[in-house]
Image (cartoon, rainbow, N blue to C red; front, top):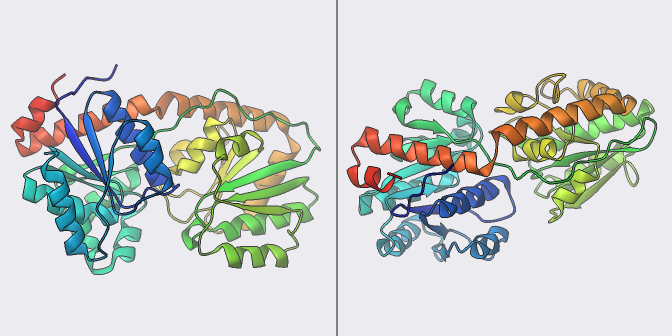
Length: 376
């Protein structure tokens, strides 16, 4: 049961509304809070992207505040747009939006909630001189993994009592992937943005090794990004094109592709709590993954899939071969994974946790009006 909070007003500052993991979780959070009776508005640095229409369909308005490329001008536009809404909470969906949320909240005497998806190290490296302020400035930080929250607590950058974990949510499809018999051609799926940190090259190397060893296996890469060209070149060099792997680009039918696959593979060097793994497990697929972020909480060796060392194509290839040889193992791993995510990662659970976090921030910061808005 989710508490009703009709007096709560939450503004979410979106760095992007493209088809991505952080954006999907923004949508889940916004619609979950709306279902709890809260007033929710999304204020976006971009416009015309995938989740804008999803939010509109749920009755959640999106306001574009990204006309200027100048950060001070964007902050001014955000603050002006928020004055009429009068939010008690201004929450960022991406780490690089934290300073916008913190600055506007300060002017409006609201609580700011910053985001961290992935590791603290990666955040600091990718944001340069602003990295430390991105973590320090918001009233509180919400990470989507326990590992990232622990990194902040250990860094000394801010009060660890105002660092929280809000795990990702997943929709559980009604149907599951079918388990094909041994010896039939199987399909391994990698889903994610094609950037260096995702290490899709490791997937291609392992796939090529498994096929050379006789595995009846092909791959599909779902997603796009700056590494697509080099990855296609690597696939050609490894003899994977045209039949061994297909690059599908960004797709709107990922759920259908998962239902037609036999395994989900994640090869990242850095993650928070990866959406792709949650979606693969929800579809009843066994998962082969590196131990990035909180992935080990999902991929439990021998129960829901297998973990492989970072950068180890040979180990990944060996696990691919093992899956190819045993329909029983694939079925057992897939069933256990689906049960785990159904029990732990529903949208209602995410909404309840978000409200708990808001209450704790209100208590710690003495925000009496916010606390009263959160009373069921």
